[in-house]
Length: 119
Image (tube, rainbow, N blue to C red; front, side, top):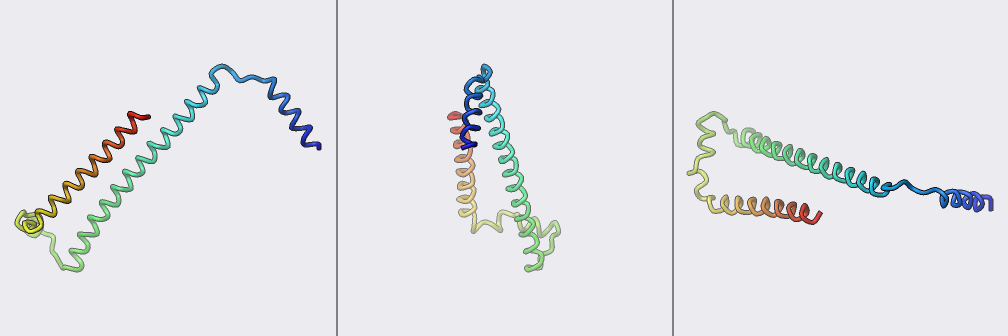
């Protein structure tokens, strides 16, 4: 019973007070700015994590090649690794993989472009 009276008093006070002009607009603008900050922060972390994982994968490949296959990394061997003749049998697969990556990047680009146009 006592809480009901307290709530009634608070509600009567709140009914008599008015918000300033543009309060809701300012509040919504502030909320939108915070949401944009969070999105940009999340995108930044996403780029950092993808880059770190990519570098880590490259390092793992070199460690595996050196440790398990006993490869020596001098200039002659590195040139053999990256020569066209080494990958000639796999050229078609490399071509398809590059096309898939290109399509993935294009898909991401157009999705972000569509979100910017909508938003």
